[in-house]
Image 1 (cartoon, one colour):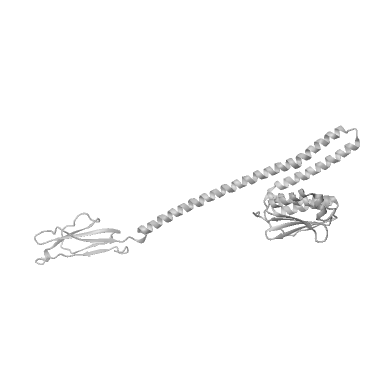
Image 2 (image 1 turned 180 degrees about the vertical axis):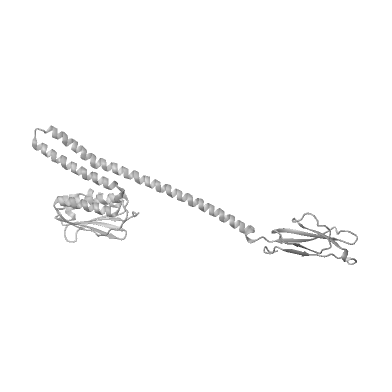
Length: 331
């Protein structure tokens, strides 16, 4: 019987040719009814609402002498369940719940693992940054402070030689100035508020302006008026600035130039610092600079997914190109 049919009506009769009106019947619907009904003459029965399942309807009759048929007639009845109560639907439901549970556990575990990995990477980056700052303090400030200390001792030893004392005093002033600049660079590189392309460009251009002005070189800055608001990783910002600084220092010390042009070029997800001078040219500049200095700049740019180029300028002199990715570092 289909699930949507809740009402069951059964008709039956008995074969009694001599006195059919005296026939009596009793019946039961197992397992819905366990006991036989009272004898009655009615030849039909109605079950208004049967739960789904398997049933056996049994009916037996007696004649006018009250003799009951020992073998009841049996009718097997199956009431089909609604589809949401079928075994296949429940199996699918259980599998879906199980799959959703496994998926949820996997998703939560994956998210937790990703957070742990992100925290680990952040801690590693922090430790790396701390180590870099400590190394910079030791390399840049430690050597300068040691030099100041030694010069101070020389001032005491040469106190009777005014010219030597004056020379030592000038050296102390120069070293103190270099120490102040180095400390300013370390503070700038450690400040997360400067981890932007604009922060790098502004600081690099200010350094170049101050240094070239003191060196007496003409300079021109060619920088876009609007820069994208893009974050830069601290190590990328630090390495690009050091390579830029080394390029400016090489121009002043070795190129014998009178003019420097500094350009910033934006190309999709990369930016390029271009330092061009009108000095000796790459051959002589390289011999003065040394291969180690060029290798260091190349290594710094390579470490941040960028590139370094040292080539002749279009007209005269040397051109250095420092290219690095914007935002996420290229792998």
